[in-house]
Image (cartoon, rainbow, N blue to C red; front, side, top):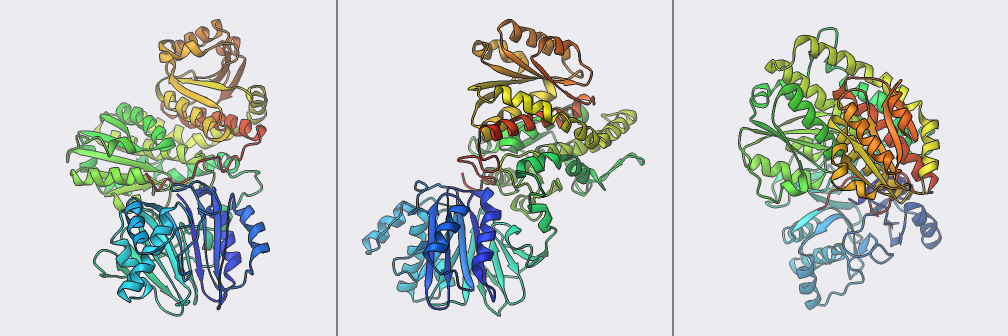
Length: 615
């Protein structure tokens, strides 16, 4: 989950590394640290807390001179978040310094062996064990840093992305990855290392993405040399041209990234269907589906694997695929799927959904599915990510960078891609009529403008947020396509405001959750006109009779729910299958405004990180 940044070249490293850490702080913000080499001395400063805390401390502690530097922002795994456990970590000699993202699972056994050899440890981290293991290999084997890293990593079990520097060989950095992303920016006589490309986008558009099980030696004035960790074989570097720009990763005048990303959804959805959905011709073009149509359309079932918000998008997709394409669908938590010995056959299609394309559990689920002969299809947002490379085919969402930890535009663009896929399959299989297919395309094309209309309820939503910001609990209810939206709305509130919230199918309320309802309980009910409207209205009446506080998400012009609810928030009318793209908007804004009013860190909620690259 952590963020890694490194630089070696002709510029001052400190401002590059510091800015890079600020851009990667969405990956973890329990602690932060930087190590710099000025040509003579290796200096380090680190602290519990955020990058801003590090900046204040570092500039008073050490000189910031030097053209080599590495930095780290941490999401704590081994060892509590404190100054000592923060990265970087020195080896016992002080010659080596390392930053690490991931988990070394056999660190305890390695630590005991190293202690027998006289090594001491200041921290509780697995990372300090790894840097001392590398040093031990150098001393025992008499090898250079690159070879020592390779030998050491072949003794470890787990996942990692690492950057190692040896002050006795100051013209090189050694990096490696297994299960955690790592990019190398290639400039003119300079190199950058980072967990993603955002830290170096203003310096170079050229990047090398290491594959799992690869390491690289990066030397000044030389080409990057990449090898397989396991067998030492050479790999030809593939330099990609980045499609990212600096403007996309700045706040653009918004107070928070989350608010910016909520308001970006009309454009993000347009970008996702642009070039794929040709309304006038009545066509959908998706290369990942077109090139594998027989395999996908003839599948006995789809298995969707995902985590968090992506899992909720998968639940919406279950309704869409079964309704439009008449294909049986199972939606699985990737973390459970990979460990429960699932029944998978070569007739299955496994659809993996992930914003980052790096989610560890989802990656493992893909590998398991492929081993069983299933066809793996990826839906992710980050071009060149691990999932996009591991799957047989896939489709990008084109949401643009999502920095806020609580996903918003990822959710709606994932639903958009999966809707296009279902419509294309339905047309191919003949399970949707031409007129219905055309109507779906026309209505999907209108969704961005309808989201803009839904965003106009912001002031009303702020009023609702102020009214209920001090609630201890909240219940979210929906039916059909909007049941997953209820789950997603509850997740958003939990993530950024820390208010306990639960999402339920509305019909299940009387099978337990109704016991929680009293005059202190806000209940958010999604009650759009399409679908099971009358049934949901009955559920609202049950809540009102128990004095619950009702916030209705309704279709424009609704009067029946208005008579019953304490507040109603309107969204434009659309067809039932597309309604989640609209009903989720007020729920995102509600959670955002409650969190702001409570003084919470909206973009960096406690204990969370954007990309979950560890188990």
